Length: 229
Image (cartoon, rainbow, N blue to C red; front, side, top):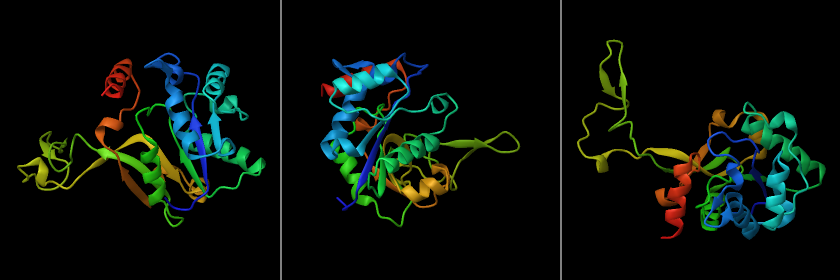
């Protein structure tokens, strides 16, 4: 792992539409957020971990899981329209005011309970100060060279990328999708621009079985099944 000084941020807004109280929903007898908290605690001291929440219930749950909670997300950043960048910047500003010395921000979303400590270490090992972000990905189920299609001006389907001549999936260039598990972010880059505008993004590949993102009730069932494997 690179010799970096990370600031871990766990974003956990109280409101949730798909799953009520999603971030603390039970998963195999533990609140969902506990999986992420234990991963962070295995990698950093309490002083380098910030839980960003507007919810007293989430904060209390985090404390019961062993995480000290001193920071409080402002109400203005607790709405459906609040962006990830603004949430990260506010937590960074608070860390700066506390005198925390860090040179990388590691964002760990509670909705990725199957992410391992090693997955985070692998992403951190790829980080260097001359890139904007290392982001965890998994191989996309749909590949733009093979089975992703778009319609042309006449309404006919054409493969999204390439000439459509690939006949075997194993021959196509790999395509990846973000899995939401790990983001290792250059602090100056996030201050300068939105993450979607980062020109220097490096992938850290994770297997599909650890890339479940909890968004709907069925995802909790899938995660519970995989945890028993």
